[in-house]
Image (cartoon, rainbow over all chains, first blue to last red; front, side, top):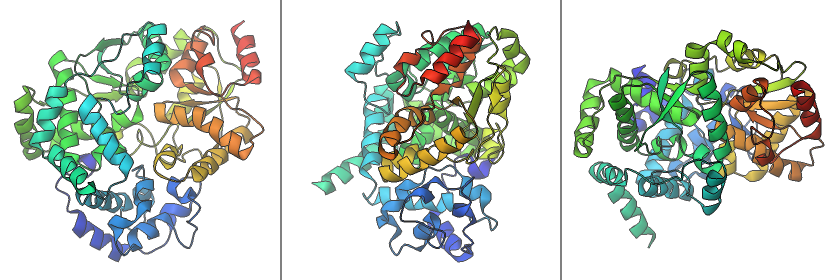
Length: 168
Length: 296
């Protein structure tokens, strides 16, 4: 249970190194079409160059835009016969990219949206109209004070501000 | 049985008619939903949780603590919300040191995680608390002759030890829930393949179209009249995503998707209008005729 549960202290860089060494490049995680990785459907991959090889083999992983195709479905982890657990090292690379200001723009905008409104999606006029027609109560942002306190104490807000400043 | 109702973001904002139907159907099954003032986004797993696990853990723990204050387990409508909240709930119950760190931050907001409740997807609740027998008792119009392709989705089955719902490579629970309504579960290839929602968001739309097209063709090839999903993002991908993919790929069929609770409502005698089918992007006259005959 503890392995998957939150793994906040998981040493991504160490695991990354180990994963690269252990991966046998058997391709099981990506090429079984009925069960495997959805990212493999991206046109640039094939059984000789799978999505996971692409992530593992990138010279500068954090600059590899293919990282963001991973949805953390854990199928690669469950299929891997060598316990490499590709999902963990792909997530570690995403963290590295985020920390260095190189995350996908959708990631940054979603995080901001959540901490500023409490919702992952914008509250639109159209949604308000639909809710009214369905006699559902209007949506409102709540707990924004709590979200501000939490994200300031954990340092997330500072991190986002720095990324923005770096972008100019 | 009463639960703190964690409706998430996607359904109330993008698919409010699913919220409406869910409240109606779960209520009829004896599942009382208590609205909690102060729930925020879970937070969303792929965009938020992965990138700052500690902050995400604190936000999720705060949400769980509100249900703890109410003394009720949480019920969700979304695979993603369940994935985040269960990971955090089980993780913090098992890790005292992390729990203390999280509670240190939470104390500034007058909340504390205590580890006293469970987090369940509505499908967990139907399977474990309501039970197939009770569902069958509520069926007034068995969906006989309707073939339904069940798409369980990814985040409710993995990681297996945390989610505790079904086998990721041979899921059967949703099919059992479909069969309980009198319908025939479709046996199709690519059953456990992801819906491709994230390819749409972060990848190449053509690839997402290709994936959805392949999956829909497999469902159609198995004789499906419709799809059923238990996750709003999967639902959206099979509805709006199908519409977009179909334009591009020129698919010669339409396969409507039903959120499972909509399908359940039909079997209870509610009409297509009652479940707000008119708000779906993908509608099919053949499916409508079949439902019309079953409900008459």
